[in-house]
Image (tube, rainbow, N blue to C red; front, top):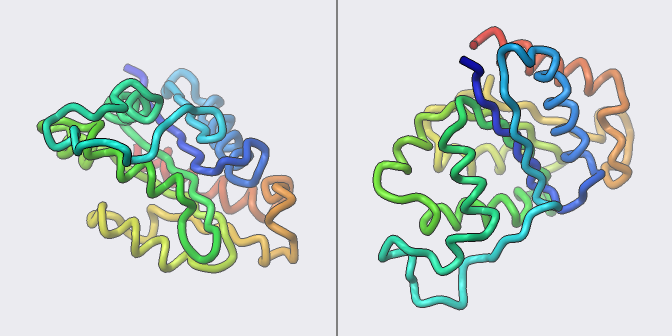
Length: 189
């Protein structure tokens, strides 16, 4: 049976560093297509609503936005064996799409789905020069069983590059870091 991997890029820039890192990850797992089934989610491609303009329907198991793409993403995540999340840091914090996704869990998940989602293995690629430790702390708040090996931080400053160019994955330096991170994931099974 194929292991299901969900790769999520939270960036709203399709061809930015996060989108290209997610593509790099997907391509790496495609080499093992006999083992893995890949689902890719890019926030720049989805239609979603932020929480609000409602009467807290989610407290009654029926979010008014139950049919948007975020709810569908949660369905894919629940069926996955591994969720690989690529998160950009803007202004020292994870981007707003990361928070929007997490906030919407209340309306998208029902019953024991919270526990089921918590049992899915998660790995994180954080892209940004400042705020990586703060971002990890935020993620740890909702996923306590993580460890340092579950994170890869890519900083454009490491090679003197400007992050807005979106070209980090063109550097061997970042490819080697990503390859090592992914090899460890594959080895874990």
